[in-house]
Image (cartoon, rainbow over all chains, first blue to last red; front, top):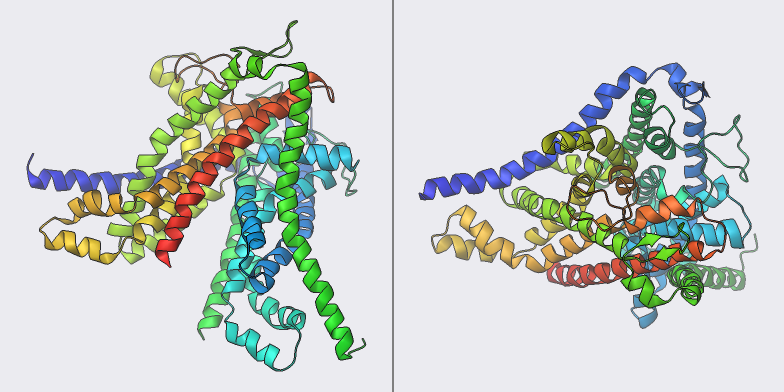
Length: 283
Length: 297
């Protein structure tokens, strides 16, 4: 084999792999959007399902997903931020701190279906919250916790120590320093992490399977102790469990478009906050 | 608000305790998940012997004799995950090498968001494509009736593991010191020989971390395999057989079993096995990732 040929093969290996990864994303988006856009209309996102789910829209699933992510955020964000503050601002290197860090890393690696089982055992059964949007939101909150802690800690690390020292030197207590100086400065970074985490949680299905999601609910309810519909579960049911699977394919594609668009939108908001914050810091 | 120094210090003390409590909560959460799995598994092993559970080759809780052998589920999980790694590891490492060693800055700015977008796509959407796109493709390619089998699951899990593998591999390759490359080039090796024979071997600990964390991700994935692998709880003979992973079994059966029956507890027992496997893999991954972090700083 000539040297030139070998170089060519090596180049094709590297560039070809990268191209293939790009193509995978291209095929995913092209297939879903090319076949799903025809289902998208104002009625699709603003109407109830009708005729045994074979026609109509997905409004209750959209509302359910929004309600779910709000509960998840309200639960996981304060807890996650507080834990990150403890780790970055208070904790000194010790055995306990190491155990907490190891726990967080391992929590991030636990399969989401196991969070579903834990949510079932803890929220649905032990705390008697039943299968409800509250149980499901809290379960997703636990799943999100390690990611929020990690990204918040990254944001806190970027605040220079001189700022803390200046505040403490002026006589502020440590809590006042955190509340009035550290957290406000770190807020854009924290928000970026929280939004990215929540966009992942919004697409999760396994943790809500046993904790409160339903295929169909009658009417729109915003009460927390009721079962709810959610976009990812709706897509799962339409594509695997429906009695007329071929007939509802367009609806399934449409649901996939809405779900992916929602996740990408949240991602873009997060990146916008990060971008704007970075350019402000540079000035 | 009363602003005396004493009051401010008291507030400070209370908040310190509050922050500390949230830190301790994470240990409690991990411990709670483990205890929940353990206690329910013990309730299962009172009824079914662990020997039957681990050596039994049939999973059929609904039959008259209720068979609880985990083997078909373990083999299914292993088969799908190994298939996914065979696809994702070379593809991910080579892409990471391209990103870190070859791609000019502007191309990188274009490629990075693509990988982040791939990571953001919900698993249920990937599973849906397994049904409507990849499955039919496999069926046509191999001339079989339907493509809901282990191979379909492997392809989809590979897609899901790719972003993790690429991102961590790229970190690993980036952290190889420049001097390694310069020495190799100075000895007359070309750029490609340097990448394959110097940079990638030097990045090996980080690459192992990347593979392990990607593997953990693939093992724990539920929706894609549930939708795309056919869900037959029998020992598979090839990649073209339908399989049913541990995660899919929990997802399918937990919704149907009566509360606190043997079958109900059995699902916690297989979850405990899954928990132990992913924990072990993540610990190995974290060990190598820790070495990578130390190396970088």
